[in-house]
Image (cartoon, rainbow, N blue to C red; front, top):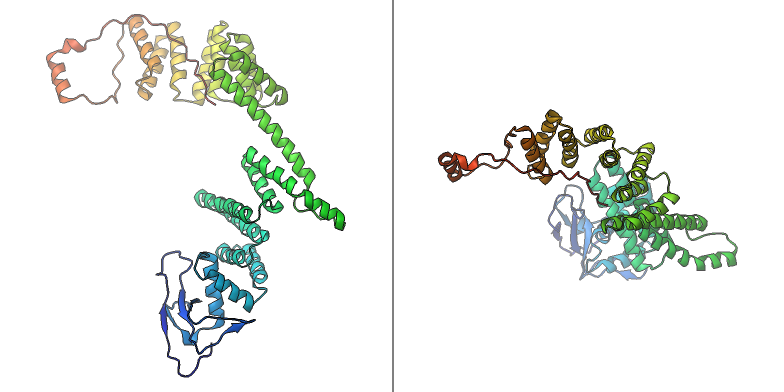
Length: 447
């Protein structure tokens, strides 16, 4: 940049102070001497305003005497990208557009090229600058799609934290675009597709319905111009997706209502909703589970058993299903089969205390005392406060006359308690407990 001979050099330090990963590292602000005129298409820089310049690599300060116009352009672009709320951002934008009217398009092409090379940080800076220079729907879409690529790249590297950060940036960029361009079809369709992928059915339906409404005028324009262009994805596909969403939401409603009726103790209505779900989704095991659960609670054990066996035929294996099968088998007189089912349930969930208690109860009832004791001691180690286990321990001691040892990891006794025990040992002696019938754990389910 040329200056008059009588101009004194001014040195400027980079501001703000350098911070790790600060994208504005290497930026300094300088003032242009009043004797220097820098104009572009009728726009001239104001000597009273400080303008940003990009410092040469490794430099901490710069002399305005040696500043090149490209350093000013680079400095202004960084401010527009990373500090768009700067008090002079619009001033920098006007200067850049006057200097290079096609700068937004050029930067956009450069950003796309950087994205393809996975130079994501530079691409982000360029797209952010473009969004400020030319705030168009495409500017928001391009930036959002960059964040989507970055999220997928971090996910492929098993960095889920960073992947989530950039997915959130992707979503926020699209919603920010909608604030400026309400009902813009491309933004709506992109958001609709995102929520479909995430399984957020209500949000997906809302955006896709808004997309179809927003493109009605576009369809009329396309027909009038006979250019055959659409504003976004194929509308037939969008309508098909909406129909699928409605079906999924209806299925979700049936399952939710069935769960709710079970929790309210209305098994008949729960069974009705479960049957309606199964009619539409015979291969989905959740409906069969609700059907079996409702039948079991209605004491229709054979019907319940059939429903739970259907779940196994569908390939689902979980402890809750086998526990329910055990209850049905026990109630229909197949005690050995019930114990087999509980054994399988424990293989699937080795530390499930209610299932241990159920199996221990059956062994105790059949006078298989060794098997009962092993299960009870293991269950007590896991959960010393479980009321079912405590009751069964009492029953075991009453029936066998054998005292089960104390739990090793109980809380230590205080010094006073130990002294009291030494003086009054009889106060802590075992006593005969009355008989309690074990309530077979039905292991009620949560949605």
